[in-house]
Length: 385
Ligand SMILES: NC(=O)c1ccc[n+]([C@@H]2O[C@H](COP(=O)([O-])OP(=O)(O)OC[C@H]3O[C@@H](n4cnc5c(N)ncnc54)[C@H](O)[C@@H]3O)[C@@H](O)[C@H]2O)c1
Ligand SMILES: [Zn+2]
Image (tube, rainbow, N blue to C red):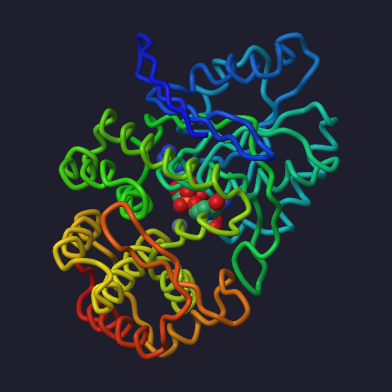
């Protein structure tokens, strides 16, 4: 079950959210300024093994994150960290990088008791988690997410992996971290577009499962978008609670976990059609959610008032960047979605604020109508407000 405890210390208010699945049992801690105490916390999880020199910690990060936040992390560690460096960018989330990192681990003498720290955005988190799943048939790792998207979504739930030329995340493993420490202070250096795009995943969490989170995002958008730490920490905590709650109920995505894909069926199609180059993932998800809301509205599944509020909040965390694609190509691409089962297209539709369902009967005509509307809008200007 999902439990939440809030404790206050002198520097920040931290929230702890438990992930409890059949195969994993760990906490997600969220707070501003957490990085400084990660070393002590990780060492505590290992019963003092790092301090005693019995266990070694390896941090996987990019030169950019290291320059911005590396000192804060290293300063709190009871023993020196060994760093493995990967360049930023989705193009590096490949098996070749994992192999190179594994070779480096071996050269540094990493053993089964060593622990990896995934320090960066979702790309580093997914890749480090996969490296941990593979190295010596599985070692422990900790997630230290530094993007909004990684804090609210990718660091929690145990999905790890890399891309193939044939598609995203086609090679991977379920391998949960030992803990997740999300320091919301690190978001202060994140480019504004990355923050906004990541917040679409929080909007998604509110729409599918948590009307209180939705209200928070609706009422405090100015504070959230200005990077207000207290507001961001509340948003991250509530979003993680939704993700943890859903993962706790359905670890392997056999049922309810599918609702986390609201906006992703068409969103992925837009990303593929535009070669992942025209918009950020969260922006594509924003467009995808608008499509899903449109379909649900035309089906009479959601009230016009709720639909209007949802769309307004999505746009408040925009602008959703423009893109150029053909509506019928997008529809054809949704047929290839990984989530489809036995040829039927799975689609998540909102039925109210805080509730969504998975349906398998969205017709091509319905999809084409919805896709045509957003394609027309996305084509009209450089950036849509
Ligand atoms: N495992 C899952 O369940 C899951 C869920 C959603 C997404 N993902 C994956 O996550 C990845 C996307 O993650 P992302 O959006 O975090 O992108 P990302 O990891 O590429 O980070 C985005 C950019 O922000 C930079 N950055 C990171 N933290 C920063 C900071 N604090 N200050 C300044 N710059 C910073 C990075 O260097 C990078 O250039 C995709 O590969 C996607 O497949 C996985
Ligand atoms: Zn997503």
